[in-house]
Image (cartoon, rainbow, N blue to C red):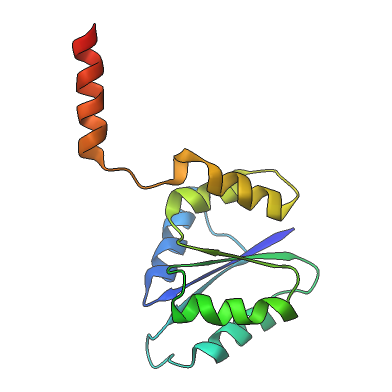
Length: 139
């Protein structure tokens, strides 16, 4: 079993959880941690509380917004005490959908596979359109 903690600066975590619920319906085992919102400025306490709410017998995938940001750094500091936590920085909706859809039981292998996929990377659509137009001209 796998749980998810989506943790960001501001309301991004709650918003992306809402987007996931549009795709998959309401999900148990998915927390949104919104730092620096409504006086939630103690990031250390937010991280501790989020991890304390999770059962000890599940893998926890923590997805943060910015590598090296305060939210990511607090989870990074917590990793040694939580061996079943897997931390990913730079979350986006395609990445989360891929993580949710995969039946891969090995969480670390799943994360490595998803992060290596071209399907989750941002794309500059102007270049995609130009490339498609160039292909059409070749025919």
